[in-house]
Image 1 (cartoon, one colour):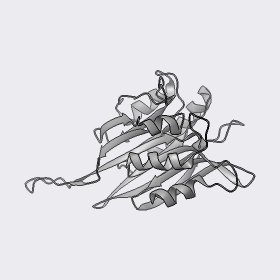
Image 2 (tube, one colour):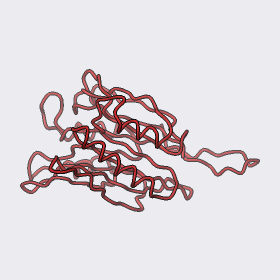
Image 3 (spheres, helix red, strand yellow):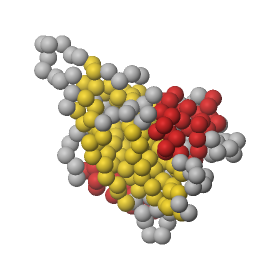
Image 4 (cartoon, one colour):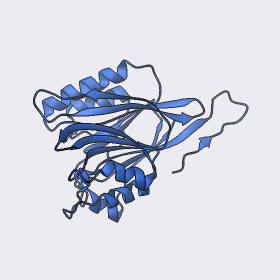
Length: 246
């Protein structure tokens, strides 16, 4: 899906709308299903996705001499927004966002709960053309139900306290329970419950751990997992891709 402006008839008063493609992918530290650390495979799948904005989770480097994000920037040309959550021995591990759209604002939300593994969200605004901006929140939620409930409360408070406008919330939400409160709260806020393609484990998916929500209602036009042969090998999750009209 290419980025393009959709022009409307001169007899209407509606402004032209913009087509966007966004994606979310847990890259598992660039370690594939074969156990190999291969940043080049991650870069190749990113190129396959051909998305305007990509949320990545579990971004890390195996040692101080490797830098996955630097490799992605050099290989793909995307602007990189880093959201490290853990720093050890000179290297970091956490979230990141890749954007080929101009980035206007960036903030980092603290989603850490008690003494559990640090979690967070990258909250940014991108310019989508013709005076249109889109807010994107990219996150990776915790493993425990109570932890996820608190994290979703914080995310929704951040979204609800902002001016209205196109908003995308995406990431690995780690929610195994289809009727769990975090999913119900997110569905209720975004006023729709899109199909949830199965993305985990990559070789034979049985769980929809990776999600994309979009506001306003109706802006989400397509949603699918990216299941190329390389994507099935490069990580333990498959990427999830959405087409938007904003």
